[in-house]
Length: 422
Image (cartoon, rainbow, N blue to C red; front, side, top):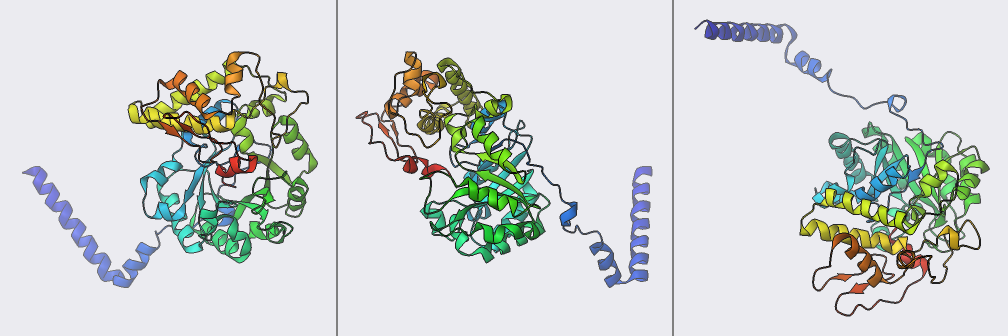
């Protein structure tokens, strides 16, 4: 009875105070007081700023840049990681598979997510959702993806044809996010028509803190070598912006050469080089060429499988998901030629060496371009493939069918790299 009496007294007192406050202030004043406590967007100078300078940075990579692979790279010394490219429209529709691409592992101490879209309204709403629902250190917008499916929707590299839209997207997204905004693009859409230098000096004023520039055009895709002279020229023209170079970094010597060429260059982003030899981050940190053994490379694959089973599950479905992502990675990893077999060191990313015999059977197997051999490697780690198993890499260079065990013809290097997202 005493407790009930106290509750009634408190309720009555609250009611009296509420009525008194409303009577004194009036309805409009109460609403004004409430609005005074609404959150307001952070100013540019209040936002967190990430220092990319001198740090190793793993590029966001479609399919193969999954969480287990990023964990392997973290163990090998990478500083900054970024999730796989996610389409803004799919995120807005609430597709669980797309939101899964944004998942972060605790070991990723500096982590960003990458979104792709062609219109400021959709990307701005997407930025708000990201800010409210996930914890990231930065949000990157892909404006360099060369894939037709993306460009045909007005996103990716096609934004280079409409630089004013790049400004709209960057300005709008930076206003609604507390996390820093970064951009990733190419030097132009068509060959012999570079345009990135025309807007890069303004990017910082649009709210982005950094921009990654891939030294190729969309038309060029991944053929020929990256234009680092152009990247350095753009870095020198925008001292207030952290400009990150991207393209063909495949050894610590490549890294050193680019970083030392201009103090305005913040760092280098590494994509395909990390897929072929993820220990490149160790080489950069230790400033040496690592003649990694076949058994050490197999241990990395074992680690990936363990991380995959932890991430996707250890049931049959999880095992087969891990296997398919392992095979996708092997479709790049086989291109590595051991240091001890090279006549010229360091190797270059665009080289396409002939088939070779390794220093032991395992090294020869790891260097095979046959999808059937990749499947054998997966069976060593994950057990036999199920009946009727078929594998075709997303970049379509090789394929495997359990029925025929016949491989498709190997396509050009540019076709092999179509899986990377720009």
